[in-house]
Length: 294
Image (cartoon, rainbow, N blue to C red; front, side, top):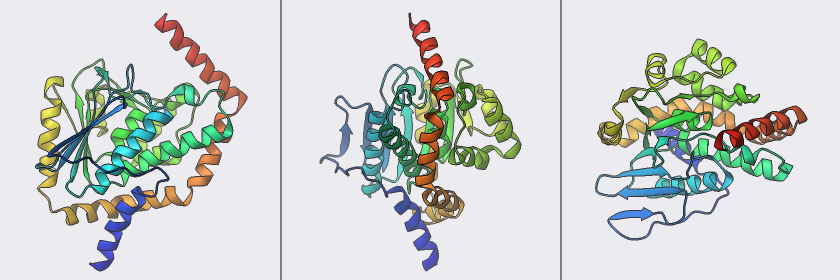
């Protein structure tokens, strides 16, 4: 049992190996940190549950600034022992997160690309290795990095709206999902669904996502937050040590593999994204987005 306890500690510890500065919560029964931040974080200490809302219109794009704020918020919760559960959701209507900010990958220096990718890794490490019971309330579309955030949580609820989609669709932009994106999907939906999803860059409707196990349930959009609160309460009814040790047994090998190859993964990303063909593809996509907005 001592070895098991050490494993649980390593699970949480892996999530905390981060160069970002740690901040403390202000005093108060219900704590809110918002201001101009792209992240709104509330902690109900009585229930032991935090709600983290992405609030960076129009699409909650994962820029370096957004990633940094998300990592800081997650670190606060990891350090706050009163917090045992987390609901991750969006404050922007119709979108959970559109994923990685394309502008962070176009025309950037190698140093900036490395910093950006390290922050993407850090967000996944913190979420995937969290000691908290984590529930994603996917109340909008969640392509690519948005899907990865949901996959990193323990349980996924999606709003039953046929306009919304979820999936790792990187190949549609000429980008290859890295091994830890692949592992997150593979361990959720299985080999065959992952093969099709990654090669074809599939986006799934809520009903399709439920069918392959990408989400655990779908509910009416106006019920999603209430249902997320119910689900996290169910998970917190399990003794923390038993739940965390079980989570560690399943997730630690995947986390260890990432941590062992982290620097190589950053180098691979920088080399790949810096290729002329990839830069042209991303620039073409950005031009298409500009035309849609016009």
